[in-house]
Amino acid sequence: MVQQESKGRGCSGERLRECGEVGEDALFWVGEIGANDYAYSIGSEMTPKEIREHAVKNVAIFVKALLDRGAKYIIVQGLPLTGCLPLAMILSPTTDRDDLNCSASVNTYSNLHNSLLQSKLQQLRSQYPAALISYADYYSAHRTIMKNPEAHGFNEPFKVCCGSGGGPYNFDPFATCASPKAQKACSNPRKFVNWDGVHLTEAVYKNVADMFFHQNYCRPSFSVLLSDKKNRG
Image (tube, rainbow, N blue to C red; front, side, top):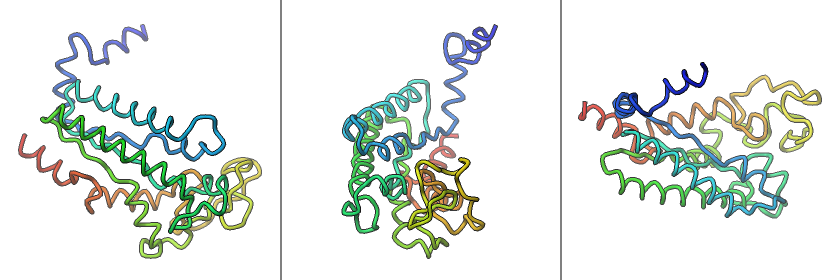
């Protein structure tokens, strides 16, 4: 019974045309994929290059599947500054730092990932000229905040709001947020960039969302997507 219901909701057979009509009018947002993999790659047997190739390949396959089913509006989000996550910073040597005082090597992995991803998206744009595929530049948005956190309302760029251990990051990988040994979360998370060492705070996500929607950190911009949809409608 469950299998029959699942098939009934799928996009195949008699429902293929219906799904295509819905897909043409919908906006698909493909979130970041691979951030945690890079953060944990230090000391791993899997190289950053292998992670990059697998992650980007899978994103491209997924986006192509959406396009093949009639999707016309897709936003694909790149990776943030994974080297600015406390997890990456405690796993990398103190000599491995960039101009933001984050892990230079891990941020390089994110940058290379985003470059390869944008190359794949450009290929898909050529293959599907009727679709509008936008790239959400999470890396640049996150970097803008980290370059001047105070201007965006943050006074704690590295220390985590929910963690333990004190120090510059308040992050202990063996006593993470919500674990029995973790301390109570900070009382003012809106002032923190990092929530638990591997995720950003809701306040940062709100800032980044505004950058995507209103400050042209999407390419083509979100307004271009809306205008195109309106003209087609």
